[in-house]
Image (tube, rainbow, N blue to C red):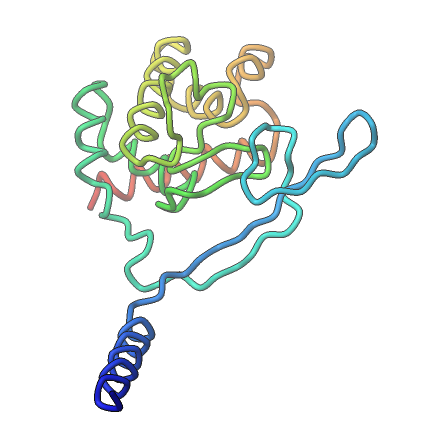
Length: 197
């Protein structure tokens, strides 16, 4: 009987040590909030509508192999071929939008690698904006639509990607918003760098 108890204890010790030795992934727990029409404050870690705004952003260190620039090259190449867009352009856009973080969420609620806005997710046939393949395909489709809408003028299409096409049409140029001006400049600079490399 005591031998049976010893084996049982040894089994649990081995299991416990094995669980402790498993690799631990970095978990992130951002908290979002919004105030409804009744004045009630709601909190969640999984925002279900664009009404939610970031309340607390948990910063966690990136592991060495997270968000590597070449991790999604095969998906970018596929989107490039399917939509007739430059691989380097799509990669530059992803770099500036999310820095290759597939779980990125902006303060405005844009999601994933190419930071797709909530109102565009359904229109672009995206079911899961955090799925890298769906996000890149949807973002590439949207960029192609914007290039067509702005007669192939890349700087205007990029400005529309950031500020919305109506803002670009209203100003008939890159809107005078610092965020949009910086965005277009950064994407074009990284695009140029990738083409030379």
